[in-house]
Length: 493
Picture 1 (cartoon, rainbow, N blue to C red):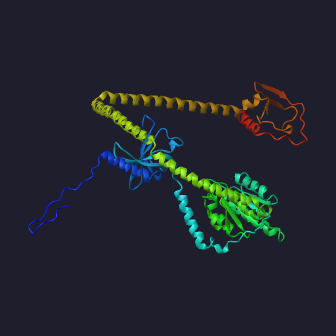
Picture 2 (picture 1 turned 180 degrees about the vertical axis):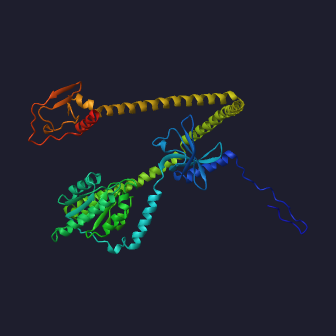
């Protein structure tokens, strides 16, 4: 600071000593930023669109994750296991998990990818929220309408798939906790197209069965359940038809769909939600179980405290592990690997660009030479003419063959319709020698008359000695014989 003045004419120092400034090197500043990012973002989830994906010869993947407003550089090292690398493609929407760090050589922050998942649940989640708001506005979630479960349940209806693991878990729990439980299973599909309608129909069936039973012999509760799965797998329990079937049920409904962290529309409409199918079976058998065995509950409480303490210790060691990972030498090794990949990429890019420029220049010269060379145009015209000649020859041969086939077919038809063909089959034609009229009945001639019989080869001239008329109905001639006789008659005339 400036010294104090000693008199009215002593004004002290006009300028104090230069203040001390802290000057950082680029490396120090980058390392400080890197440590801050590692401290505040040890693990983070980011979603966006993949672009500029490239694979290095070392096997490491580099790409950019972007959205409408920004982009983030990402790297996936070759040694990272448990990742479906096929999910990475330009233009694909993905959900990535990893650590935010800084690449020292460029001073660029980036995401070191540890987990890759497809991004496609946003539309389903929006539909879930819309239906939830709609049903909540209609009062389907009101707590006032929810009915308490009986303390002792002896008959329970179950709506689930008979092949599901949840059904086996429920049976196992009830066999252990309440062996006398009467179970009425309404089997149905619990995922896929049409599953929601089957679930609603199963709930309606159990209500109808309950109404048909005598007083005191109906169901105490209905359990709607299935095991865990993705949001798409559990979507049947988010359909409006299932929610309304639960709402209109006259029997209290317990919903136990998926795991503890999974919530569906049926959970909000049901009278009681259980975190898992096994937990629902325990809730429904809790009253009887408390009466039959008191000590397992105490043992369960003890186990709960032990596991709670174990979870706290586990969380403590996980925090220590996270701190150790931030100081792990692997981070430094990954930085060196990425720097090596960057240098290799730059080294490979230089000769490739030179070769590409030379190739482009050669292509331009070839195009200029092709434009001033008439032999190529003449060759194309010759090839075009030869192709047309070949097509003309093939078309003429095809037309000739078609006409020959048609003429042969007409010849065959003409031969079948000729009288000669009929005579060759063993028939003959008899007509009066004097008049030339064809004889069809015996009474058309008389003894002493001369008749001529025409055969397939030659004629027979004969005289009638006796004629007898047939008493039975004449046999009806087929069309071929009539055609032959008519043709023969015309021929003789």
